[in-house]
Length: 248
Image (cartoon, rainbow, N blue to C red):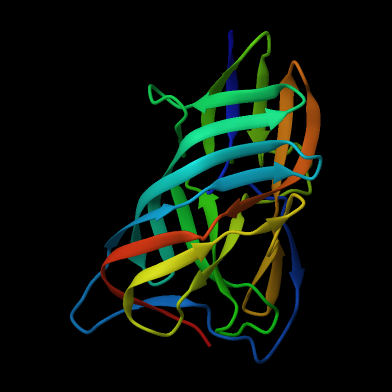
């Protein structure tokens, strides 16, 4: 058995970004977090989910059965210190099925600290299409983890592309509810065939195109491939105080 070092994302990823200007005098105010009178930031939160899967357009796959998260809403448009723990994780591809591990917890992948930005997920910039753009707090890697297989050594990197046209890393997932105070919300990451849905977001009339990429080095090397992440049932979030995500 050999150890396999992975540098990867599941959250959950990194993006090839291009920014396309869409000038609009009617650009909506950016989505933002509101607290009730007398309340102040930060607001701590936790969340749990069912199965999460990262799939490339070539069919390579990392699958985790559950995840648990914690972080802080630190300001009206800012999430900080988000850490995701994925449990019972395996990787599948030409190299077979491997158990993936961070630190001493077998089958558990732990991300680095992540940031979050509330965004619109359609050009209409309406309250019916609001999400969160997740990025690494520093660098371009969401998580690094080690997997074990027989006579195999493979390093995966998700979202760190050498292409000069690529920009800041991001994973965009929808969020509900909007325009109501609650301690409960759901973050829904979706993909189809390795393509994130949505794979872009809008702020101030400008479209930002973001999608995950995964690269392999080792026994079965492969160049960067577009990748998408999906969480079954979404991440169920609980905040320490009632929060409203306000949108147009």
